[in-house]
Amino acid sequence: MNSNNNKKFLTFAVSAVALLVLPLVLQGVGHAWVRILDTALLYILLALGLNIVVGFAGLLDLGYVAFYAVGAYLFALLGSPHLTESIPWVAAHFPNGLHTPIWLAIPLGAGLAAMAGVLLGAPTLKLRGDYLAIVTLGFGEIIRVFLNNLDNPVNLTNGPKGIDRIDPLTVFGVSLGEPWEVMGHTLPPVTLHYYLFLSLVVLAVIICLRLQHSRLGRAWRAIREDEIAAKAMGLNTRNLKLLAFGLGATFGGVAGVLFASFQGFVSPESFSLQESIMVVAMVVLGGLGHVPGVVLGAFLLAALPEVLRHVAGPLQAMTDGRLDAAILRQLLVALAMIGIMLVRPRGLWPAPEGKA
Image 1 (cartoon, helix red, strand yellow):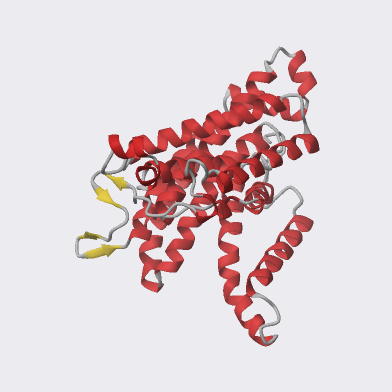
Image 2: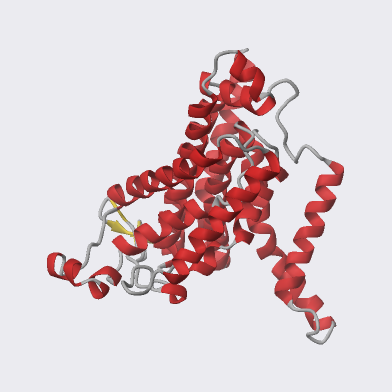
């Protein structure tokens, strides 16, 4: 028993050190690689949230990107001069802009996304499978259409042009938008964002693992396996489904706030149906309902397109530019996913039998 505990502690310690050192090593090669890690961590956060809805409760949601957009646009409005320039009342009361701090922005993003999740879940309580997927897909597209058109008569979202000049997050007085000197070493903004994203992902993993092994997690699994039997056992399936939608959406809202501050710009194009499908693919590829598998699937699918950029470039040159690099990357990702799912249909790292 002590030997197993020692092995687990050693694995944990080595993993923690590797995660802390990794961006410091990669920033020596190029900041682009650290940015890829940042993007992967954001996708891991999104995949963990969707796993609550799809993996734990068995509710197929194809509009999850809507909650991502809600969090991103909330912080874009609260952390940029857009509202001050567009709405006279805001300019009169906040002439210097809102400049919302991180400790307020993240809870607000999570709360608003949770409300959107409950609003989505309420009319879909009796739907399952394909019908639920179609309705949630429509919800995601409705949000994107609203973002594209809420620029008249009141310019709320700035339409397809998006919102720019978004404030970088400030943590304990340190602005993540500026390099930080530590013991003679310079940490660029991408590395500072990495550590913030990593801390929130670790917190999200702990929450998901606690949920998975709690009474609530077992109730969700009962609904996923047989909703009628779950009702017969006395479970309030209505409230449990709404809770799954709401909790899953909070992760999307937090990820949206982080995305907006990291990019400094948001537009409706960032929240297309393709993003929703990508996050669903991460959950399925890693292993439905298994937190470590979801993390692995999200990391691979987020990083793979960037790695394949180095493969697509030479192939495009070989065909004299007839093959577009972006389309070729998508094709290579799709082929990789098909191959993996044929070999391991339950995902790369599925839950052990009897514990799914």
